[in-house]
Image 1: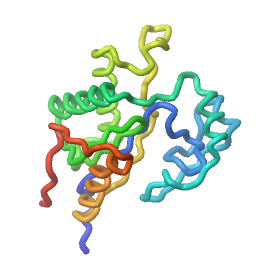
Image 2: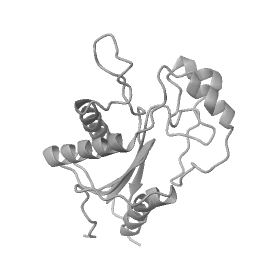
Image 3: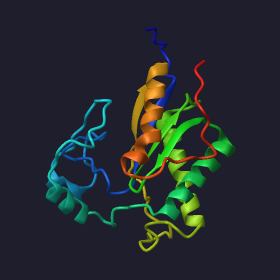
Image 4: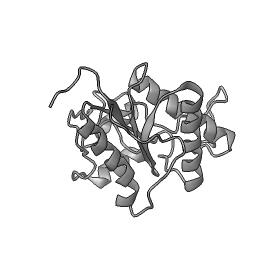
Length: 203
């Protein structure tokens, strides 16, 4: 199978604040722990696998204690908040471009499959999260609205870094799209349909 030097797209996982910590026993996309209050719970545990590590066993008590040490409560989106996040994503791609081939927004994470983008994919993920946060605040639904910072801004409801998997082949793209589309179903929720999602068509 021929693989071009440029990826056909990306599978992006964005987690909400406090959901997946950098030193999670199962692994993370971080190579060090920035927050001093998390260092007692171990060093960063970076992984390079493309497969999900969500179902690996871990010590739930350690995770509970680590979450309890956070500056703010860990974020779990309600249905209304998830809709606002989706509207924010749609606003971003509608105004500034970008192609989303699949999207699933759950309580504590979002999955996206994108086409190639004109600038760094992590920057694109950051813009999507920023647009979602803007929409949450506009609708009075920001999850951390009760924790304003001294300058009047609010803490981000998102973890700092996304998890990005590069998709090099048509098979990779279709596999990732199926995974994202089925993600709500695996949690016994209906499949999601978003107006900004563009069906994937191989070149």
